[in-house]
Length: 309
Ligand SMILES: CCC/C=C/C=C/C(=O)SCCNC(=O)CCNC(=O)[C@H](O)C(C)(C)COP(=O)(O)OP(=O)(O)OC[C@H]1O[C@@H](n2cnc3c(N)ncnc32)[C@H](O)[C@@H]1OP(=O)(O)O
Image (tube, rainbow, N blue to C red; front, side):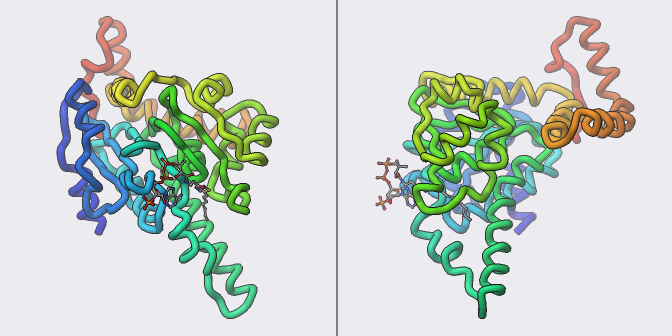
């Protein structure tokens, strides 16, 4: 399985800099790429991996296959030295309708077990497995840019809050829908959304009422950093942004992601301590000399050939 996934990830590596054709390629995927049945993985430009949620007829609802395929996909991307940055988007009319409500009954609602303790234990195992589906995005050292168009419901919010940079279209809306289906969101939104947007009051309001939040409010509260007029413009913007990240030292970029996440979850003193330990190794990279020399010569980082990481 792992080697099949790897060969999928290695196929179709494209140009160094994203261009019009790359954007077209990103938005014209034929279908899921084997071995996946819910994801389409492609390489629209050098060092950029595009992961597209691909069940458009079902509004990219997250079925059982999806929950494990994301883990498989991002575990491979994490160790793929060819990849420096990831773009995630959704195929079809919307980004995602969240958990597949048809599939949910077969797994989450029927955990099995001979008594309450065993049923609870099984359910705990299932929930932690589902949590891993989005935690792999955060654990992946490569930055992940997510591009949302149309609806982003329930599990979709769990997914995007685990990403590093969020973009959306003008028509996008976000909904922490879980209370409407009788559960407390349990795969990341309640833990990560308060760290993403500053206002606890707004987080509480969204999570307790399941009201829709539209793109203008998502931008003003900091859930997304940019709003684009339509999906085509957004995908072009996502690729351009990914190209900027991919052009920089992977040692610097991955170290930055890992330390930002560490610092989010620790005190300033702990974060500084972790940073010092991190950079006592990473400052010894040749990338520092190469980048500094390029800066002195007023060259773009895009002109510096960094080794793979
Ligand atoms: C341990 C568990 C952790 C995870 C928890 C996660 C929780 C959640 O995600 S809660 C949120 C659940 N999702 C919903 O409540 C959304 C339901 N869907 C909708 O409201 C609408 O579909 C939507 C507004 C997203 C889009 O509307 P649109 O008119 O564009 O499409 P539809 O005609 O409604 O749907 C088209 C086909 O897609 C199927 N579908 C849509 N959403 C789901 C879904 N969540 N699960 C399964 N299937 C879904 C819909 O049935 C249509 O299929 P078909 O009839 O075969 O054409």
